[in-house]
Image (cartoon, rainbow, N blue to C red; front, side, top):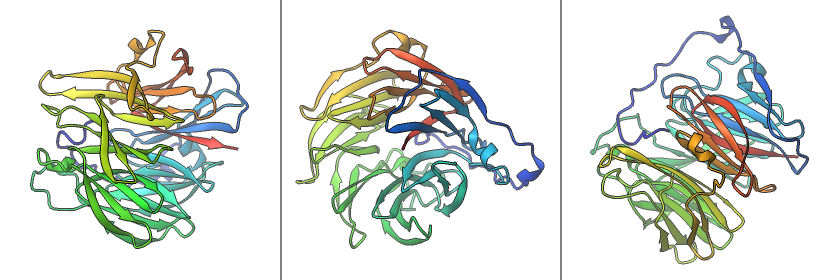
Amino acid sequence: MKQILTYIILPCLLLTACRTDIPVTPAQEEQHGEKQLTSITGFYLLNEGNMGSNKSTLDYYDYPTATYRRNIYGETNPNVPKELGDVGNDLQIYGGRMYAVINGSNKIEVLDARSCKRIGQVDIPNCRYIRFRDNYAYVTSYAGPVQINPDYEQIGYVARFDTATLQIDAQCLVGFQPDELAIVGNRIYVANSGGYRVPNYENTLSVIDLASFTELKRIPVAVNLHRVRADRHNQLWVSSRGNYYDIPSRLYCISTQSETVIDSVDAAVSNIDIVGDSLYLCATEWSYLQMQDSVTYGIVDVVSHKLVTTNFITDGTEQSIKKPYGLKVNPVTREIYVTDAKNYVNPGTVYCFSPEGVQLWSARTGDLPAHIAFLGK
Protein backbone atom coordinates (compact mmCIF):
# COMPACT_ATOMS: atom_id res chain seq x y z
CA MET A 1 0.00 0.00 0.00
CA LYS A 2 1.78 3.15 -1.22
CA GLN A 3 3.31 5.01 1.75
CA ILE A 4 0.13 4.53 3.77
CA LEU A 5 2.12 5.03 6.93
CA THR A 6 3.41 8.50 6.06
CA TYR A 7 0.27 10.49 5.54
CA ILE A 8 -3.45 10.55 6.23
CA ILE A 9 -5.58 8.67 3.71
CA LEU A 10 -9.26 9.44 3.62
CA PRO A 11 -11.46 6.45 4.45
CA CYS A 12 -13.20 4.90 1.49
CA LEU A 13 -16.85 5.61 0.83
CA LEU A 14 -18.70 2.31 0.78
CA LEU A 15 -20.59 1.73 -2.43
CA THR A 16 -24.14 0.47 -2.06
CA ALA A 17 -25.25 -0.03 -5.65
CA CYS A 18 -26.03 -3.56 -6.75
CA ARG A 19 -23.62 -4.79 -9.39
CA THR A 20 -26.35 -6.67 -11.23
CA ASP A 21 -27.23 -3.34 -12.86
CA ILE A 22 -23.64 -2.68 -13.94
CA PRO A 23 -22.14 -4.31 -17.07
CA VAL A 24 -19.40 -6.84 -16.30
CA THR A 25 -16.08 -5.93 -17.90
CA PRO A 26 -14.82 -9.03 -19.72
CA ALA A 27 -11.35 -10.35 -18.92
CA GLN A 28 -8.68 -9.30 -21.41
CA GLU A 29 -6.31 -11.94 -22.80
CA GLU A 30 -2.83 -11.61 -24.34
CA GLN A 31 0.09 -13.88 -25.19
CA HIS A 32 3.38 -13.26 -23.41
CA GLY A 33 6.54 -15.31 -22.97
CA GLU A 34 7.12 -18.96 -23.86
CA LYS A 35 4.94 -21.95 -22.97
CA GLN A 36 6.15 -23.91 -19.93
CA LEU A 37 5.24 -27.29 -18.49
CA THR A 38 6.39 -27.61 -14.87
CA SER A 39 4.83 -28.42 -11.52
CA ILE A 40 3.61 -24.80 -11.39
CA THR A 41 0.74 -24.19 -13.80
CA GLY A 42 0.42 -20.42 -13.40
CA PHE A 43 0.22 -17.48 -11.06
CA TYR A 44 -2.40 -15.03 -9.86
CA LEU A 45 -1.58 -11.35 -9.45
CA LEU A 46 -3.61 -9.20 -7.06
CA ASN A 47 -3.76 -5.52 -8.03
CA GLU A 48 -4.30 -3.33 -4.98
CA GLY A 49 -6.07 -0.37 -6.53
CA ASN A 50 -5.98 3.00 -4.75
CA MET A 51 -7.68 3.29 -1.38
CA GLY A 52 -11.23 4.53 -1.76
CA SER A 53 -11.47 3.60 -5.44
CA ASN A 54 -12.86 0.06 -5.00
CA LYS A 55 -10.60 -1.08 -7.88
CA SER A 56 -8.81 -4.17 -6.58
CA THR A 57 -8.59 -6.70 -9.44
CA LEU A 58 -7.17 -10.14 -10.12
CA ASP A 59 -5.06 -11.27 -13.09
CA TYR A 60 -3.85 -14.75 -14.06
CA TYR A 61 -0.89 -16.01 -16.11
CA ASP A 62 -1.13 -19.55 -17.50
CA TYR A 63 2.25 -21.21 -18.11
CA PRO A 64 1.16 -24.05 -20.48
CA THR A 65 -0.42 -21.57 -22.91
CA ALA A 66 1.71 -18.47 -22.11
CA THR A 67 -1.54 -16.52 -21.73
CA TYR A 68 -1.97 -13.47 -19.48
CA ARG A 69 -5.59 -12.64 -18.52
CA ARG A 70 -6.48 -9.34 -16.84
CA ASN A 71 -9.38 -8.68 -14.48
CA ILE A 72 -10.72 -12.23 -14.25
CA TYR A 73 -12.67 -11.93 -10.99
CA GLY A 74 -15.60 -9.94 -12.37
CA GLU A 75 -16.16 -12.21 -15.32
CA THR A 76 -15.95 -15.34 -13.14
CA ASN A 77 -18.20 -13.93 -10.42
CA PRO A 78 -20.69 -11.64 -12.21
CA ASN A 79 -23.21 -11.52 -9.34
CA VAL A 80 -20.85 -10.29 -6.61
CA PRO A 81 -21.53 -6.62 -5.72
CA LYS A 82 -18.48 -4.35 -5.83
CA GLU A 83 -16.31 -7.21 -7.19
CA LEU A 84 -13.16 -7.82 -5.10
CA GLY A 85 -13.41 -4.56 -3.18
CA ASP A 86 -11.06 -1.87 -1.94
CA VAL A 87 -7.27 -2.34 -1.60
CA GLY A 88 -5.94 -5.88 -2.09
CA ASN A 89 -3.19 -6.26 0.51
CA ASP A 90 -2.17 -9.94 0.35
CA LEU A 91 -2.78 -13.08 -1.71
CA GLN A 92 -2.10 -16.67 -0.65
CA ILE A 93 -3.12 -20.18 -1.77
CA TYR A 94 -3.72 -22.93 0.78
CA GLY A 95 -5.61 -26.23 0.62
CA GLY A 96 -7.03 -25.66 -2.85
CA ARG A 97 -8.41 -22.24 -1.92
CA MET A 98 -7.14 -18.75 -2.59
CA TYR A 99 -7.36 -16.04 0.04
CA ALA A 100 -7.33 -12.38 -1.01
CA VAL A 101 -6.90 -9.94 1.87
CA ILE A 102 -8.92 -6.86 0.97
CA ASN A 103 -7.78 -4.27 3.47
CA GLY A 104 -10.08 -1.32 2.76
CA SER A 105 -13.15 -3.56 2.51
CA ASN A 106 -12.31 -5.20 5.86
CA LYS A 107 -12.56 -8.77 4.55
CA ILE A 108 -10.79 -11.88 3.35
CA GLU A 109 -12.21 -12.99 0.01
CA VAL A 110 -12.11 -16.80 -0.29
CA LEU A 111 -11.99 -18.33 -3.79
CA ASP A 112 -11.53 -21.72 -5.40
CA ALA A 113 -7.89 -21.68 -6.51
CA ARG A 114 -8.62 -23.46 -9.80
CA SER A 115 -11.79 -21.82 -11.01
CA CYS A 116 -11.51 -18.48 -9.16
CA LYS A 117 -15.16 -18.92 -8.13
CA ARG A 118 -16.10 -17.16 -4.91
CA ILE A 119 -16.65 -19.42 -1.88
CA GLY A 120 -17.24 -16.83 0.82
CA GLN A 121 -15.62 -14.17 2.95
CA VAL A 122 -14.27 -13.59 6.45
CA ASP A 123 -14.87 -10.16 7.97
CA ILE A 124 -11.81 -8.72 9.73
CA PRO A 125 -11.36 -4.95 10.20
CA ASN A 126 -8.34 -3.32 8.58
CA CYS A 127 -6.89 -6.75 7.74
CA ARG A 128 -3.32 -6.90 6.44
CA TYR A 129 -1.60 -10.27 5.87
CA ILE A 130 -2.51 -13.97 6.08
CA ARG A 131 -0.60 -17.21 6.80
CA PHE A 132 -1.66 -20.82 7.51
CA ARG A 133 -0.98 -23.81 9.73
CA ASP A 134 -2.94 -27.06 10.25
CA ASN A 135 -6.16 -25.91 8.54
CA TYR A 136 -6.24 -22.59 10.38
CA ALA A 137 -5.60 -19.14 8.94
CA TYR A 138 -3.90 -16.37 10.89
CA VAL A 139 -4.52 -12.77 9.86
CA THR A 140 -3.00 -9.54 11.13
CA SER A 141 -5.40 -6.67 11.78
CA TYR A 142 -4.81 -3.02 12.56
CA ALA A 143 -8.23 -3.30 14.28
CA GLY A 144 -8.98 0.41 14.22
CA PRO A 145 -9.73 2.98 11.52
CA VAL A 146 -7.18 4.63 9.21
CA GLN A 147 -5.98 7.56 11.30
CA ILE A 148 -2.52 9.06 11.65
CA ASN A 149 -2.20 10.02 15.32
CA PRO A 150 0.88 9.78 17.60
CA ASP A 151 -1.52 8.91 20.43
CA TYR A 152 -3.47 6.28 18.49
CA GLU A 153 -4.91 3.94 21.12
CA GLN A 154 -6.32 0.96 19.20
CA ILE A 155 -3.92 -1.96 19.56
CA GLY A 156 -3.72 -4.54 16.78
CA TYR A 157 -4.28 -8.28 16.86
CA VAL A 158 -3.94 -11.57 15.01
CA ALA A 159 -7.24 -13.29 14.19
CA ARG A 160 -7.52 -17.07 13.78
CA PHE A 161 -10.18 -18.74 11.66
CA ASP A 162 -11.00 -22.29 10.56
CA THR A 163 -10.37 -22.67 6.81
CA ALA A 164 -13.22 -25.21 6.51
CA THR A 165 -15.96 -23.19 8.21
CA LEU A 166 -14.47 -19.68 7.70
CA GLN A 167 -15.42 -18.94 11.32
CA ILE A 168 -13.17 -16.82 13.54
CA ASP A 169 -12.57 -18.58 16.85
CA ALA A 170 -9.87 -16.51 18.57
CA GLN A 171 -7.86 -13.30 18.63
CA CYS A 172 -4.44 -12.53 20.09
CA LEU A 173 -3.48 -8.96 20.91
CA VAL A 174 -0.07 -7.78 19.69
CA GLY A 175 1.40 -4.31 19.06
CA PHE A 176 0.15 -1.31 17.13
CA GLN A 177 -0.52 -1.81 13.41
CA PRO A 178 0.86 -5.35 12.93
CA ASP A 179 1.93 -6.21 9.39
CA GLU A 180 3.49 -9.41 8.06
CA LEU A 181 3.72 -12.60 10.07
CA ALA A 182 5.64 -15.88 9.78
CA ILE A 183 4.89 -19.24 11.38
CA VAL A 184 7.94 -21.30 12.41
CA GLY A 185 7.63 -24.40 14.56
CA ASN A 186 5.21 -23.64 17.40
CA ARG A 187 5.61 -19.87 17.14
CA ILE A 188 4.03 -17.03 15.19
CA TYR A 189 6.24 -13.99 14.65
CA VAL A 190 4.45 -10.70 13.96
CA ALA A 191 5.99 -7.42 12.76
CA ASN A 192 4.54 -4.50 14.74
CA SER A 193 4.85 -1.28 12.73
CA GLY A 194 3.04 1.37 14.75
CA GLY A 195 2.73 3.19 11.45
CA TYR A 196 -0.37 5.16 12.40
CA ARG A 197 1.47 6.50 15.49
CA VAL A 198 4.13 8.35 13.50
CA PRO A 199 6.62 9.47 14.78
CA ASN A 200 6.05 7.08 17.72
CA TYR A 201 6.62 3.89 15.74
CA GLU A 202 6.64 0.40 17.21
CA ASN A 203 9.98 -1.46 17.10
CA THR A 204 9.20 -5.03 18.15
CA LEU A 205 8.40 -8.47 16.79
CA SER A 206 5.62 -10.19 18.76
CA VAL A 207 6.13 -13.88 19.55
CA ILE A 208 2.89 -15.89 19.82
CA ASP A 209 2.60 -19.45 21.12
CA LEU A 210 0.51 -21.44 18.62
CA ALA A 211 -0.97 -23.89 21.13
CA SER A 212 -2.26 -21.33 23.64
CA PHE A 213 -2.56 -18.54 21.06
CA THR A 214 -1.15 -16.00 23.48
CA GLU A 215 1.66 -13.49 23.12
CA LEU A 216 4.77 -14.74 24.91
CA LYS A 217 7.10 -11.79 24.48
CA ARG A 218 8.37 -9.14 22.10
CA ILE A 219 11.76 -8.99 20.41
CA PRO A 220 13.20 -5.47 19.96
CA VAL A 221 14.32 -5.02 16.35
CA ALA A 222 13.91 -1.58 14.71
CA VAL A 223 11.27 1.04 14.02
CA ASN A 224 8.32 0.57 11.66
CA LEU A 225 8.67 -3.15 10.91
CA HIS A 226 7.01 -4.59 7.82
CA ARG A 227 8.14 -7.89 6.21
CA VAL A 228 8.80 -11.17 8.05
CA ARG A 229 10.07 -14.24 6.17
CA ALA A 230 11.64 -17.49 7.38
CA ASP A 231 14.53 -19.27 5.64
CA ARG A 232 15.56 -22.93 5.99
CA HIS A 233 18.30 -22.19 8.51
CA ASN A 234 16.15 -21.29 11.54
CA GLN A 235 16.38 -17.61 10.72
CA LEU A 236 13.82 -14.87 10.27
CA TRP A 237 14.41 -11.95 7.94
CA VAL A 238 12.61 -8.82 9.09
CA SER A 239 12.47 -5.47 7.31
CA SER A 240 12.24 -2.04 8.84
CA ARG A 241 10.84 0.82 6.79
CA GLY A 242 12.76 3.34 8.90
CA ASN A 243 11.20 6.73 9.61
CA TYR A 244 11.64 8.26 6.12
CA TYR A 245 14.02 10.87 7.59
CA ASP A 246 17.23 10.02 9.46
CA ILE A 247 16.58 6.30 10.08
CA PRO A 248 16.88 4.36 6.81
CA SER A 249 15.11 1.17 5.82
CA ARG A 250 17.12 -1.93 6.72
CA LEU A 251 17.01 -5.75 6.80
CA TYR A 252 17.50 -7.71 10.05
CA CYS A 253 18.27 -11.37 10.71
CA ILE A 254 16.80 -13.04 13.80
CA SER A 255 17.60 -16.50 15.14
CA THR A 256 14.42 -18.47 15.92
CA GLN A 257 16.45 -20.49 18.43
CA SER A 258 17.73 -17.62 20.58
CA GLU A 259 14.96 -15.25 19.43
CA THR A 260 17.40 -12.37 19.21
CA VAL A 261 18.71 -10.17 16.40
CA ILE A 262 21.97 -11.71 15.20
CA ASP A 263 22.81 -9.58 12.17
CA SER A 264 21.63 -6.88 9.79
CA VAL A 265 22.12 -6.00 6.14
CA ASP A 266 22.54 -2.42 4.98
CA ALA A 267 19.84 -2.58 2.32
CA ALA A 268 16.50 -0.85 1.91
CA VAL A 269 13.52 -3.20 1.61
CA SER A 270 10.01 -2.75 0.24
CA ASN A 271 9.42 -6.37 -0.72
CA ILE A 272 11.29 -9.67 -0.34
CA ASP A 273 11.09 -13.31 -1.43
CA ILE A 274 13.29 -16.23 -0.39
CA VAL A 275 14.06 -19.13 -2.72
CA GLY A 276 16.73 -21.59 -1.63
CA ASP A 277 19.48 -19.63 0.08
CA SER A 278 18.82 -16.44 -1.88
CA LEU A 279 16.77 -13.59 -0.49
CA TYR A 280 15.58 -11.35 -3.31
CA LEU A 281 14.61 -7.80 -2.43
CA CYS A 282 13.42 -4.67 -4.13
CA ALA A 283 12.98 -1.26 -2.61
CA THR A 284 11.54 2.10 -3.44
CA GLU A 285 12.75 4.03 -0.41
CA TRP A 286 11.34 7.52 0.05
CA SER A 287 13.34 10.15 1.94
CA TYR A 288 11.83 13.43 3.14
CA LEU A 289 15.36 14.77 3.55
CA GLN A 290 16.22 14.27 -0.10
CA MET A 291 12.59 14.44 -1.31
CA GLN A 292 13.10 11.52 -3.68
CA ASP A 293 13.03 7.72 -3.95
CA SER A 294 16.07 5.46 -4.14
CA VAL A 295 15.63 2.10 -5.89
CA THR A 296 17.35 -1.23 -5.16
CA TYR A 297 17.07 -4.74 -6.69
CA GLY A 298 19.22 -6.87 -4.43
CA ILE A 299 20.06 -10.47 -3.53
CA VAL A 300 21.22 -11.49 -0.05
CA ASP A 301 22.88 -14.83 0.71
CA VAL A 302 20.99 -16.02 3.81
CA VAL A 303 23.93 -18.21 4.91
CA SER A 304 26.67 -15.59 4.80
CA HIS A 305 24.29 -12.65 5.42
CA LYS A 306 26.07 -10.81 2.61
CA LEU A 307 24.50 -8.60 -0.04
CA VAL A 308 25.53 -10.41 -3.23
CA THR A 309 24.27 -7.74 -5.65
CA THR A 310 22.41 -4.45 -5.50
CA ASN A 311 20.89 -5.03 -8.95
CA PHE A 312 19.70 -8.46 -10.06
CA ILE A 313 18.52 -6.94 -13.36
CA THR A 314 21.54 -7.26 -15.63
CA ASP A 315 20.41 -6.06 -19.05
CA GLY A 316 19.69 -2.42 -18.22
CA THR A 317 15.92 -2.77 -18.58
CA GLU A 318 15.32 -1.62 -15.00
CA GLN A 319 15.39 1.87 -16.50
CA SER A 320 11.88 1.26 -17.83
CA ILE A 321 10.50 0.48 -14.34
CA LYS A 322 9.11 3.61 -12.71
CA LYS A 323 8.15 2.36 -9.22
CA PRO A 324 9.09 -1.25 -8.35
CA TYR A 325 6.32 -2.55 -6.10
CA GLY A 326 5.78 -6.32 -6.01
CA LEU A 327 8.38 -9.10 -6.13
CA LYS A 328 8.11 -12.87 -6.52
CA VAL A 329 10.46 -15.63 -7.68
CA ASN A 330 9.27 -18.85 -9.32
CA PRO A 331 10.71 -21.60 -7.07
CA VAL A 332 11.01 -24.05 -9.99
CA THR A 333 12.37 -21.95 -12.87
CA ARG A 334 13.87 -19.16 -10.72
CA GLU A 335 12.34 -16.57 -13.03
CA ILE A 336 11.98 -13.23 -11.23
CA TYR A 337 8.78 -11.19 -11.37
CA VAL A 338 8.84 -7.48 -10.58
CA THR A 339 5.72 -5.31 -10.72
CA ASP A 340 5.73 -1.62 -11.54
CA ALA A 341 3.16 0.65 -9.88
CA LYS A 342 4.17 3.53 -12.19
CA ASN A 343 2.32 6.66 -10.93
CA TYR A 344 0.13 4.71 -8.45
CA VAL A 345 -3.13 5.67 -10.18
CA ASN A 346 -3.00 4.07 -13.64
CA PRO A 347 -2.52 0.45 -14.78
CA GLY A 348 0.87 -0.99 -13.94
CA THR A 349 3.16 -3.60 -15.50
CA VAL A 350 4.49 -7.01 -14.49
CA TYR A 351 7.99 -7.86 -15.77
CA CYS A 352 9.42 -11.35 -16.05
CA PHE A 353 13.21 -11.76 -15.82
CA SER A 354 15.36 -14.83 -16.35
CA PRO A 355 17.39 -16.13 -13.37
CA GLU A 356 20.30 -14.23 -14.93
CA GLY A 357 18.37 -10.95 -14.81
CA VAL A 358 17.45 -10.59 -18.50
CA GLN A 359 13.93 -9.37 -19.28
CA LEU A 360 11.84 -12.08 -20.97
CA TRP A 361 8.44 -10.41 -21.26
CA SER A 362 6.12 -7.84 -19.70
CA ALA A 363 2.36 -7.35 -19.51
CA ARG A 364 -0.04 -4.58 -18.54
CA THR A 365 -1.82 -5.16 -15.22
CA GLY A 366 -4.44 -3.42 -13.11
CA ASP A 367 -3.71 -0.50 -10.78
CA LEU A 368 -0.91 -1.03 -8.24
CA PRO A 369 0.08 -4.64 -9.09
CA ALA A 370 1.48 -6.07 -5.88
CA HIS A 371 0.90 -9.67 -4.79
CA ILE A 372 1.67 -12.89 -6.69
CA ALA A 373 0.62 -16.42 -5.71
CA PHE A 374 1.81 -19.45 -7.70
CA LEU A 375 -0.64 -22.23 -8.51
CA GLY A 376 0.67 -25.80 -8.45
CA LYS A 377 -0.71 -28.83 -10.28
